[in-house]
Length: 161
Image (tube, rainbow, N blue to C red; front, side, top):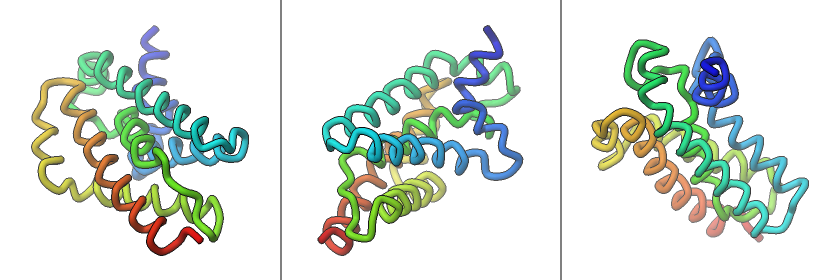
């Protein structure tokens, strides 16, 4: 059971990447987005899948927050990337496909989320102070909201034909 919990909290083991595990976790969510666009190209299907990804990894983060802290010996360990999956999924919700193709949309959504997740503009940083899994999760969800707004603007104003 502990192996399954670690597999989930590490974002399907992407959190074990030797460098930048949060970036790898975000990339996992973007890969799911890209596959969903390719396999279920209806916007409502893509939105639904990404909403489910966000909800699933949010539940993982909150429900397994105490376990994760104990298993890795600190609050918000770098190996825990379930929060990046959830935040990145929020960042990808409803994004239009860029005129240059799906890869541009993926790149804009990914870059926007990483920017806001790393810089943590107000009130994102303050949200980290929430207890256990909530503090680990909510700052990434807020960064995802900021990233989604920025990506929507970039894609709709400059990159969608």
